[in-house]
Image (cartoon, one colour):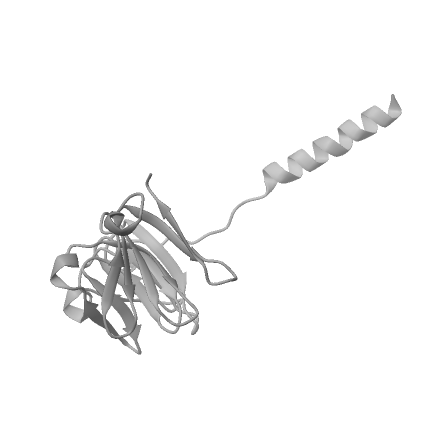
Length: 178
């Protein structure tokens, strides 16, 4: 009986301590310099900057202030869907392979038949090829010189590709909608 009361007392203390803990966070918004309030992706680069992708462009946060990038700064589209930190910081948007090049944004435009392809995930193979999952255009592959693609026509179960991953043997895993 004493043991049960003791355990109940300890449990009550632990529960009270858990309830008493407060979360600490800082919220940033438009008034702080973000270009738009709908954040779609966040990553940290090798220099420690936070990169925030929104529906209206890209922001780099240094811990004090935001520097914003948009189509006028080199993005092909202002809607940012994902990031991939490989040999460069790649930015998933529509119609191009975009990447951070020092203090500016560079873009390699997709071929005409893929100009509306919306990139939603990016992965890199050991040989440096970039694979981009798209919302309806399959997987786009960039070998450093030209683009190719994998679609339903050549084996995918669905052209809406949600995610990509390489395993330890460099085998590409493709997650589709179906």
